[in-house]
Length: 110
Length: 117
Image 1 (spheres, helix red, strand yellow):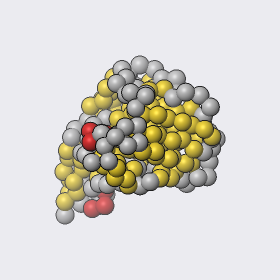
Image 2: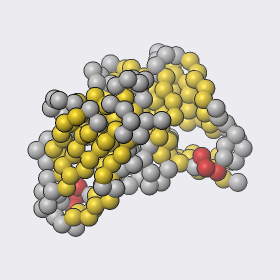
Image 3: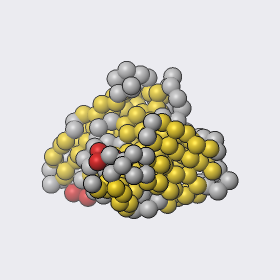
Image 4: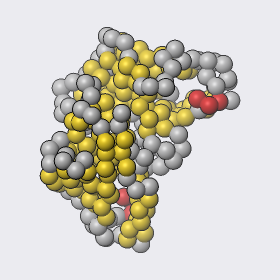
């Protein structure tokens, strides 16, 4: 099966940088995704890494190390609206099904 | 970007009744759709993978006779919760993979909140 670990909660100051780590165990690994979910809403796709390295999309960057089964999401220039839950998720298997981690609740404070 | 809709957004039903939830991809064809449930403050748990024209693949522990999935077309999948009970109350979310798009991207519907009394 698949398992993922990420911190349950993180607090950071507006304007700062925060890194959310994710480690995983899975077979048939395709890639690692990150999703954002605000309270009461549906998840929205942030990024995807299939190969080792850093992917940058605006203020958000995501990193993957396949050999370490590890990735992280980096959020820069934090804004209050970034307060949300962030899920890492692995794609695996024939249908590339996506298995989610427990989610990290990020609270951005003034 | 790609849009996925769900209907209804919220439903309250009596114990023992069945509830059907629709998931539609509005501007793309989805050969694969996924159904998740999410309890408050918890993660999304994959229930089943739905492929157009074939039987759904259910995750371990998910009763296929209780959660009926039909993927009748490239833009529509339905989840029917049969003989619903209070413990089935949850947030049900579908996602769809664009057949012509990036393989890794799933587009999520807005979710359906089910409350069984």
